[in-house]
Amino acid sequence: DQQVKQNSPSLSVQEGRISILNCDYTNSMFDYFLWYKKYPAEGPTFLISISSIKDKNEDGRFTVFLNKSAKHLSLHIVPSQPGDSAVYFCAAAKLYSSNTGKLIFGQGTTLQVKP
Amino acid sequence: DTGVSQNPRHKITKRGQNVTFRCDPISEHNRLYWYRQTLGQGPEFLTYFQNEAQLEKSRLLSDRFSAERPKGSFSTLEIQRTEQGDSAMYLCASSLAGNGYTFGSGTRLTVV
Image (tube, rainbow over all chains, first blue to last red; front, side, top):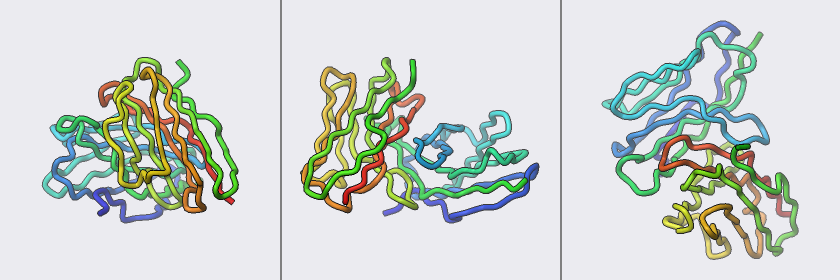
C-alpha cells in the first residue's frame, strides 16, 4: 500500500534550467507535505513544506505546488545547480488530524544537475 | 544545539547477534520517530514516542525489535537475533508537536 509515490526514479537537467520533481498521494487525509534532500550516508535534510490549506509555498530557489484535487505535488528548483544533485523525497503526514504526525515517504527521485 | 545525533554511524554484526542504536534528539523536541530505509526506497516508519510514551508501532516492527525513550530524552532501538534482512539505514527524527521534523545522520547496519 504505497500511499505516496514518486514515479520518476531519476531526473537529469542542465545547470541553470528548471528541475521539476513530482509526487502523487492517495490518502486524502494527508494535510501536510514536505520535501527532503538526501546525500548518500546522510540523513534526509528538510527543504520545504506546505500545508493543505495552501497551493504554493516558495523559499528561494525552491517552490512547492500542491494540487489537492489531483492529489499531486511538485517541487520546482530554479535555477538548478550542480550542488542540487541528490535524492529527493516527498513525504506526507496527517499532522492536524492524528496524534503522531508520522511521515509517509515516497520512493525518492535521484536528481542529477549537469554543469 | 547540534541537531539530532545518532550512534553508532555504522554497525557490522553477525547474524543472530543483538544490536542497540542510540538517538539523541533536539533537546526541546517532544516527539521522536524511528524510520528504516533500504536501498532504493524511502524511509519507512517504525515507531513514535511522545515524550517517554511509545504511542505507535508499525507492523514492520517485529517482536525482535524494541525501542525505549526513558525520561523522554534519548531513545534506543534494539534488534535481537539479527537477520540479514535487518540490514538497512536506521534513521531517527525529532520534532516539536509536528513542526520542524529533523533527521539524524542515521546508523547503517550490516548483518553478515
